[in-house]
Amino acid sequence: MAVITVVGGPGAPGATTGALALLLAWPLQPGRKVLLVECDPDGGAVLAGALEGRVEAVFGLRNLAVADRRGLLAQTLWEQLIDLSPAGTGDRLLLPGLTDPAQAPGLAYTWEPLLEALHGLEPQGYDVILDLGRSGAQGPGAVLARRADVVAVALRSTLRGLSATRPRLAALREDLEQAGTGADGLGLLLVAEGPYPAAEVSRQFGVPVLGVLPYVPRTARLLSDGGDTTDRRFIRSELMRTARTTADQIQLLVRRRRQRLAPTAAPAAAPSPIAAQPAPESHPLAYAQQSHPHQPHQPQAQQPYPQDAYPLQQPYPAPPVPQPAAPAPFPGQWESQQQSPPVYGQVLRAR
Image (cartoon, rainbow, N blue to C red; front, side, top):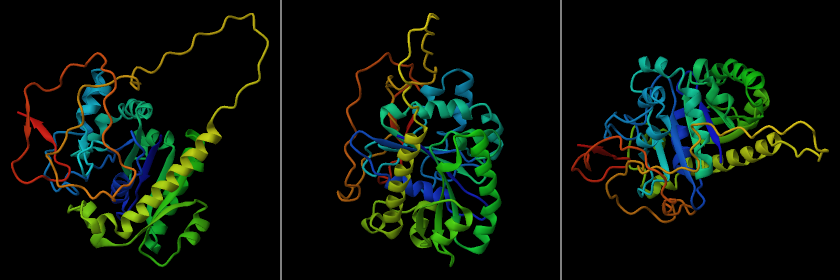
């Protein structure tokens, strides 16, 4: 349905934590899936944070730069995904980010092809959340924000947070107006730490507030530093309730923007003597009608997930009619990464 970017700023405003909360709270209709991509050029945080280092840093964004040069970005993308769905159903996925900021220059020419590939996932039922961090919306990665359906800027409602956000927000708004599809997709993801209410922040900045997340460090630490996110108390926490409300507001904004940007039907015209031009071919990275034999890396069996956590979540749908398969990326069979009890977000690796 959409590509949503979450942009941070100085002072750790909570962009990655907010993006991960949206991933886990995103409402899913039957057959729908959601993917979080860590596009922060300063490096990803989920592997060492929410997953507590239990997944080896062999999967992720860095592998796509080499694959893109070989013309294999679309196929390699599937091989880098980690299943974060609590029940292992493959409908809440993560593409880990860089492990070293020095790897960022190698992705300068990969951001745009990657975005094309992510937009190509929409017919397959995917929504995509991009965590751009504090500097991902600038430089080579600016295209990720320019072509997104919604750009959510994370900030805290403190004087320091608001002061640091104002110039960055103004620059981002100008860039979206000049090089993007307009600034009407720009919104605020406010963390209510300070005394300034959402209505006043929105009025001062001239930007709507898409959601107000509570300042609850103990609960948020489960997303930033790891913990049991399948616990019923976390699922029903104020943080996750407001994240679900924010996801609903983002989807509403996406629908409104697409109605505005949708081309209007042109009136019927008399036949022209000039021959009609053939329709352009689809982008080579658009693989909406293809299937890939490799499913996202699945964790070991986990404890049953509470049935009322996500009432709209459905079992992983049956795969489409098989198409010509791409070559297998890794030889050999798969084995569990460790013999310890099941871990949230654990993946499989090749021998």
